[in-house]
Length: 296
Length: 314
Image 1: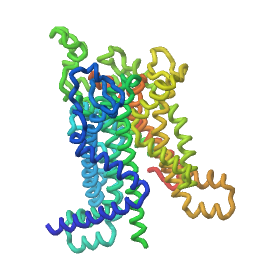
Image 2 (image 1 turned 45 degrees about the horizontal axis):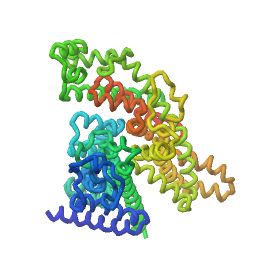
Image 3 (image 1 turned 120 degrees about the vertical axis):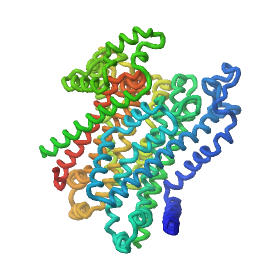
Image 4 (image 1 turned 60 degrees about the horizontal axis):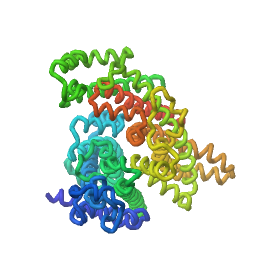
């Protein structure tokens, strides 16, 4: 128990220091408010949205494709629904699905990468060849085929994204593990007779964490792009749920008469990914700064 | 060298074979009857049975797979279920369209990205570098379908300059009406430019700090020579890999871009074969995309070895 707790404490300390450093970078300071806004929408979007995202008014004709006005800040769509409310409620499912997918990929990739790299030898060779095989396939195509088989549901989309992003993460984590494994602190832990589990969890994980942080943010932005793209292609979250990709796809027919219906979710998804990518840049700079601090 | 290429080509063939089996198994597991899908809801049991007989759907799965793969190896790709045409006829035209689009985007995007990346990397943290880097960040962040629709809003709805859809009638060469290519190619280019530019910039910054560059500057070599002889070959090494893998990425991006602009290429064909459960077509299109991806990765490794004498292929 104490072993797990001390592992968590060390992990938490390194996460907290990284956040402090992110605030010192230029991209981090721009990124955090954007990402925070989207997170607020994720948790409270449906609560603070002025209208229902799915309910259609009784007289659709009267409310169809209205331009932005004080009553409907971002206008209404072809079914007379409030665009702002739909965008606000759409954040949750996209971020939750993409986040779960990215997290799944990170966990799978970290487990595969660390154990394969630490074990080495035959196992490592076989595992890495399988990862190479998976990577020799375009991810969107792989995702399309898996979803085509399993059918689109939030869980399937997240699982698919976790699966397709695992090989790249495993590769990065493995190469970090390889360089760590012969360091003195790992070797002395081995000489002390610590278990493999202890070494991976307590010695390797805190040191792999900075790499995982960068990977996590990059993977999260890829995951958002993938979920939105799949939604756009009709293989994502199904209507009438407000999904940004799907909303954009459905608004195409009204692009000329009601561009706001498309522009609102387009702005939402673009700002989210820009925010996450800036955050990734911030984390990257922060880990570099942390390294320089250590050297001084 | 020859052994390396032979081994890699062998591995690619094995990968493609595994892929073809996997897709076949996937489609076998799928619910839904292909015959019912083709004939629609009103079909009688008799006509369904006749069609199943005609398509050979009554035979056991492994038998169908073996006869299919045999035909493919002999160059006969079979007939599409939904379009009722030989797949060779459909795929050839579509593939040509996609290649034209990809080549267009590649020829514009890659040189521009490399040039911008080298400049930005040599002048880091200047105003223009910040601007280029910011543009590139937006480029990798905005999904292709958003870029595409923004272009339509700008060039079609507002300026009335370009047609919003890029439909190409059979028998028409897309090169005779280049205006339909502009927006799809720009959309593909925007992401391509962003990825390659960011990679080039990062590499140039790293190489510029190397001792041999400082030596070259201090011994008074002309800047042009330093860039061409010292900086370029070293900074391009990792970039080459990105360029090749971005070619594979482009094949994925093209699926979406072709969908946005109704451009009749291989990506649109893939989506349609998924929608109509057209398994023979899906198999062929997937194998083409996966094969192109694998071969572009091989080319990346080969060019890497050609540029870097330290890399030995074995």
